[in-house]
Length: 187
Image (tube, rainbow, N blue to C red; front, top):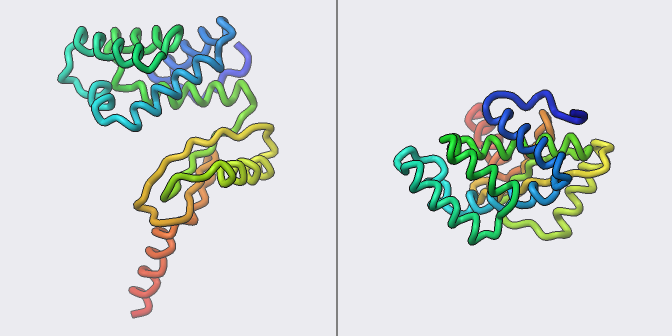
């Protein structure tokens, strides 16, 4: 099993590794990743879906039916759908976010990609995203950089970029907090 990231561990890591191996054997890593990313985006946008995934209030059958309907409507099928239904049947759906994170790590390692998390105050244009990718490629020397962009208006402006263990915070919120702290010390 060449290319498996040994930093993926725990229950979520075991599930992610199993999904990755199945996708690799089926030669459908990209298709599974696209479906898993679609589900992750749906969770990020829907409080109801997040509640369904995380809340222990829903019974197993109720959760299974609801998840099947969501997957069908989103046209998520095949291995990704089977995986999500399996996770739900095993009462592990509450950890699906961590499983997706670990699956991304495995795919990135296999493809030779570096994953960067970017937080911006507002939606970035394609030109801005390409500029960030180019800058990160020049820093890492990797052939590909996969960006996971989150929008957080609380940072006011600027960006935070996390690449592995390194983080660059050029958000306006951080700069204002630094000025506020400096003024308190001076006064």
